[in-house]
Image (cartoon, rainbow, N blue to C red; front, side, top):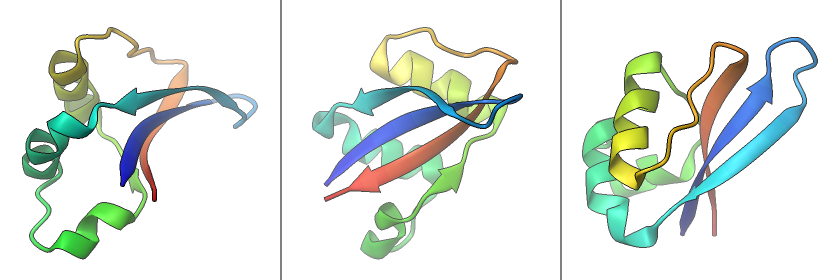
Length: 76
């Protein structure tokens, strides 16, 4: 299971970029997203500004911008 952060341009709604979350961060990601069941990890989620900030710290990359809508996605 691979999770990634998707950034969509607020004006065009087109995908601007994506960032893969390392698989070894799954436990932290699960806590951040408050998943209570294993199947919770397979859905897509809108990310709050607070979640985006925590994800930046977790993966060591800065990407937050008011120009984007951020979502968490999962592929198998």
